Image 1: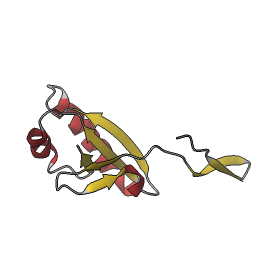
Image 2: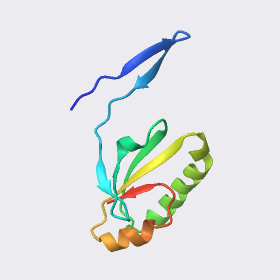
Image 3: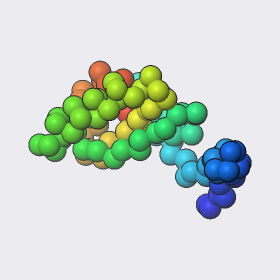
Image 4: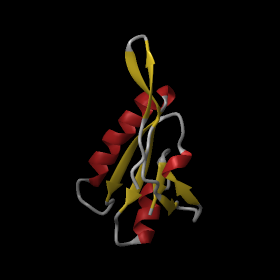
Length: 102
């Protein structure tokens, strides 16, 4: 479903006032459906991950560093698990501060 971006010219430079996205709605570890579009007025990293991969722990630590450094400036993460085991996913992401869905 294509959506056109709307631009405002401010000081000779275009700025995005609204952006089109394809919304994602999936349950979090508590079973509550969380939409990507619910995260507003932030820069959002949309990440697809498998916590069961050997390199996952190092990658999560790198993302944690990004989150800790920039979350106070309006940065957030919407992380979609592609793990085959839902229980493993819940255990692996239960202490992460960003939105984790399955």
